[in-house]
Image (cartoon, rainbow, N blue to C red; front, side, top):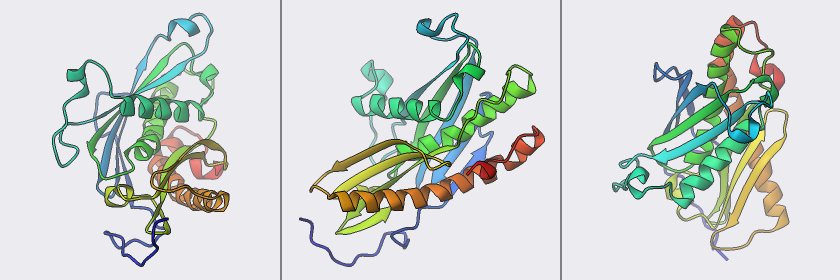
Length: 259
């Protein structure tokens, strides 16, 4: 078992305090939806492209699709890593993360109202300091909403496809304490690491929990989930604030009203 002792988080946060979340809309001008998401020193660029076709398994179904690609730029970390395009295929880690992001975002949408279109989500990590997968989910949701708002403005949607708000956050056990939204220095020495994807209506989309150095009890799992859910509320508030003006312009209900 990991010995418990007092420690101060590198950025001085309380154990239950997430990093400040900043969502910059329209960061890139060409995609239908673009958001630069920053949480502490982790920075992820989330772009959404609308394509007028669907995979073959959905052809003639009238239903849309969403898929994601995730990649880490070579100098997103302290040492340069090779571009995954140079390896011929995404790493196992990237493939797992992009599937997670896709599942998370599809859970927030009514794909039947999308028509036979595909939302292609690109999440590129510009700077990594822990929690890039959870930050990508949170930022990509906002980028998806921006893309859908453009389709709505073009009168291309029969209805509003956003069913719920989705976000993600990490929690871990470090030096015997449960802490929220781990930076890399904490994540790299966490005895237990958990990622939670959830909705503003308090639904759970996915839980990824791993005993990295020790097992954890059912009680600890419950406490980690409670802590993560409190962190998600702040992520939802940041999303709602970022999108409030755009949704009001479109005559749509504010995200915060759905919480």
